[in-house]
Image (spheres, rainbow, N blue to C red):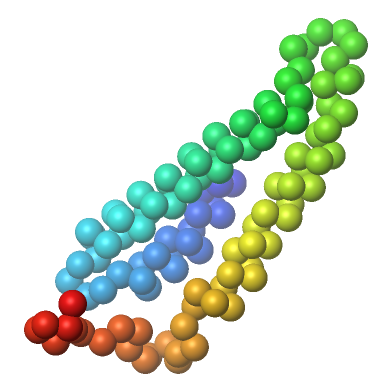
Length: 109
């Protein structure tokens, strides 16, 4: 239930990204990309825990399995910072009403 509340601002943002008369198609593509990202992040996290040796079995004495958990936590906390720093290069320096890309003329391919 909490995840659905966290999803609502993203739905509003995705709806603003949709071009006129292509709302359903664009929204489906954007949401599909988001869902793919969530699935890849989940699988990557599980793979990272496996490589770091954080594989508890639920047995007594599994304390050693959590020895590198701090490293997994640090990595997962720092990786989103890549997106923050990449925004300076990936987001164009335009105002909200400005056109991002111009249409190509015939032969400009």
